[in-house]
Length: 342
Image 1 (cartoon, one colour):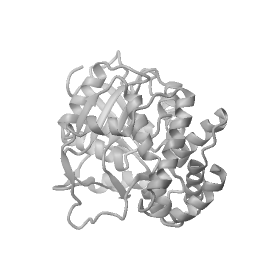
Image 2 (cartoon, one colour):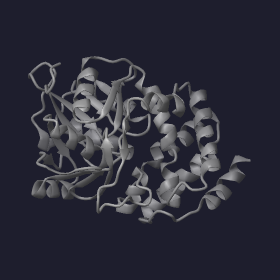
Image 3 (cartoon, rainbow, N blue to C red):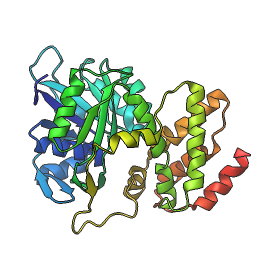
Image 4 (tube, rainbow, N blue to C red):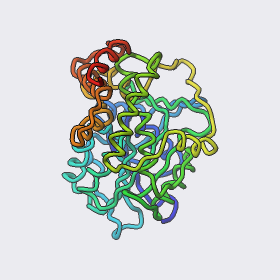
């Protein structure tokens, strides 16, 4: 597949989707952002503002507020330029997003790349589309204001690994990696990408802690319990996953650069994706598809996961109540989880 031979339909153009789409657009790739109406209106009015550690870009990126607005779609065997969907919404919106893609008439053979946290999005996507890909996304991004995304990096803008679901690599993986590298990311094709997504998921199990308590301080012992529960459940279920250290050792030599917050845009107190959901008051949070999936799979296998369950319950409660980060302390979460663990 030739370089520049794809149109990237970014479904969910927030922190991650906006960063990927913005840099791909800067690299001359064809991009269309699909996002909520307020974000789209701001992008149409003033361009997508993409702030990095050393630049402030205003990008005239096409943006639509529904998948149907990106039609017509190009099938694999009909046009020289192919459509590729980068699914960048949070995991709690995956099923609805897939329904929107299908309802808009997106052909079943259009490739869908799950650029998301958690390890369950791909199996949902495969029910609807025949060419599904997993992507490990290690991209710092903050989206708090319509029309603006902060990617506080100098050097590489992020690190990604891509591969077919459930395993393998192909020509599209190679082209996607080339386009991502041209856009300033470090990227690699990985035939066992879902093992790597398992490593990323182990890390993301802490997202709820950041949101609930407002930070990670003092959470090490609690998070050790959370991750041990996940390992026990996944191993019992036969889910193959990479340990975080293995993934980090592979990423380290490839991912060059440093975090640097743009002038006038000081670092938020924590800034993770779940923290951002509470700050923006979206009413939903990703914990069900991170901690909650560990709990639900554990119930099927008869393996309790009380530490994950506390995070799931409290994060959902805070999202529903539109609470700001920091409502509970680690001590309170520990007191709630420990009796159930015993």
